[in-house]
Length: 618
Image 1 (cartoon, one colour):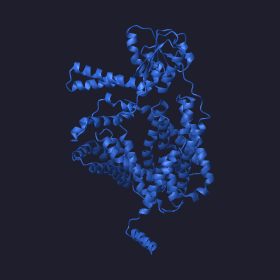
Image 2 (cartoon, rainbow, N blue to C red):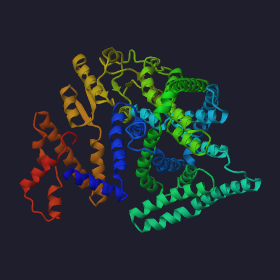
Image 3 (tube, rainbow, N blue to C red):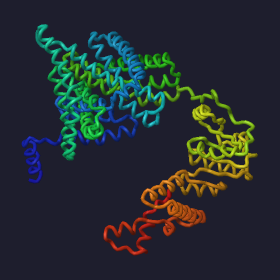
Image 4 (tube, helix red, strand yellow):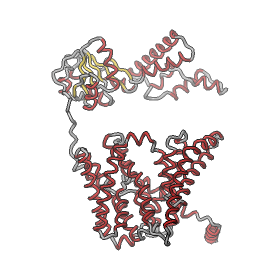
């Protein structure tokens, strides 16, 4: 009886028109698959695709009509292009113009031409080969950006080149979608006048959006912002994006193109960051749904029937694209290692290929089986990329640091030796040089050494953690040695070496926090200073001066802070637990309790301080 009741309840829920099973399944698949795939290094995009494949007709068949999901999920691409448009400030485009519109255009054009030729050799019609090839040209932004971010290379010179190319490829989807719309076969005979009217309406839609973006949108958002109702601003952001997409759709243009242009027009708006924050959750959710829908649309039956063609396509497209990228990079004077890395990292197809292929299917340029073959080719290339990066390690040349303009430390004998010439060492050197002391400086960053030479400093190359380098730098004859390196472990290692090998040298060191300072004193350092302590004390002194304290009062207060800190440090150095030193700190616990109307005794206030003091950094 209970089982029958559950069945009847489920049937009643289904008959009410709200079928939550597919929705819950899609959310669960994304929540489980994406973190799993990211953990094993395959990226979130592949996680969505795998989850979609599992739920679709080729998997467990929970969702039998992927096209219905795909139509809704295409809004994710629309919102994604709006976000890209918001990032396209004219000043940013101008600063990267050579890399975006130079290197990016060359790579896209050359790779597109070559891959179209590969498509023709594989037996596809010219238009189909063009769509196949150009889709594969569009590298996966998600995969490349993730790898660069994990390696901390987004801001490097080679990373910036790849980011610029990705930016151009993201922009290229807009004209490519327009080309697909232009190549689409007409459903009925159209007169020249009808075509001209269609062309005119498209131009009119673009001009209308430009006028609205320049004249109307900012005042519109200003009025809404004055209402201070967050959900109204969110609704307005969606209205702008979807309204621009609808305007272009009814004019015969791409929805994505309309959203992109709307983003560009609002890129300099004062409401840009608010718009981005409002759109981002919808963009992420719907774009994930788009990848899920693409995975559902993959027909494993067709893939199985055409596995040989797909295997050949994957190998041919990846090899030809990688070789083209390598040659272009070398011709534009990139090093062998940089060119090889770019070729392997950008040799796969990307998520925008799915957008192009589904649009081409909707336009009648390619059929379902071809779309399945093309999609499978791109997906497999994306899966292979992390493994290709692992294999690349065995072929990458060892990075040899250029020593042009750099002199190694040898036979130095100055009175003062500074080890490390970063932001701390540069400032510390100024009083010594002002007093005309002879100072030798070593560092192991050749780029920094060359930069220092440009402003008149003589810095020698040398690794302070090596005993032979310390001897060559004059540590045995120096009266004073300053350790100003930027890595905690490196600083401690140098201090220990100096204590063991050069016990007569007086040593000062930059400490990173209180425990590190204690560690350095125990390593034989005569004087240590936490890198932010003095600046923070002076900063606080200026604060009380701005609030009315006299210069004498501020000086007295600052000296009191320093004295209490010295007492705490000495007690901790002697083994005292930091939790028992709350008496040497001034806390706000009592004042806050009084403001809230709570009676706090001196004893309980001290207990509150003891629990609120940061364990390591103060």
